[in-house]
Image (cartoon, rainbow, N blue to C red; front, side, top):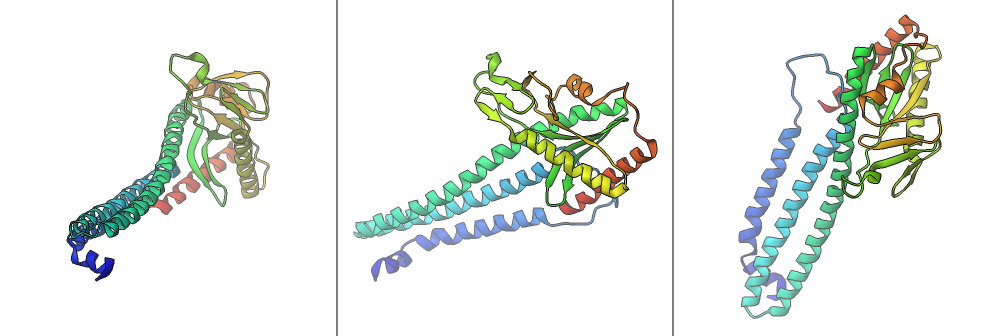
Length: 297
């Protein structure tokens, strides 16, 4: 009969068939959770902090679950088939089946591990954006207007936008894990030199560049929208880290503490922005935020 005949004659299909049906049922359930429906209200809400990352995390949760089920679908039938064939005396064929099954399962596990690493990165970023967003919302008591997770055409998103009484700020959140033990002070001290961020394990310039890029993109869009120059100041928020500043730079670097955010954004002595222009900017940003929620309904 050959090896394939032996597989077909073994208990392989008695295990593979129900496992496959379970996997199909799981897939159907995942699709059902993604099915869109009509909401009881017509207006879209404003986007909350980290909404883009939340969506990516949900998608990764589904991917990891399906990939793990696929791994199980490979391992169990292969093990049962190999055991049945080895009992029939064809040990080399059983070994070949096990080796093939393990290779496939290992590939699926590595594929799943990549999703796990993405999930960890997105989850950390999500927590950081929520932490910064919650503190920025408190600036509304100081007369600021705050919008989160502003979607940009072909440019990803801006984590937070704050319209203070005198200026507009684009806030980029960068979340890094602390190094070592919590009791070690120097493991979460970051030095800002004006041109770079010096961390205990290296130097980073990309976060500053991203903050500048986001501010310029928003500045161009708002200026084009209203036909008036609208300056947007870049802010980089690094939650949980102590920041030592050795020089000034074009990007304002803070952590997620309210005192630092307020000192960086709220300036009662500054000349107020034109009220009409400020109202137009706020209305535009709110509509922009609400419209982008249509993408995830």
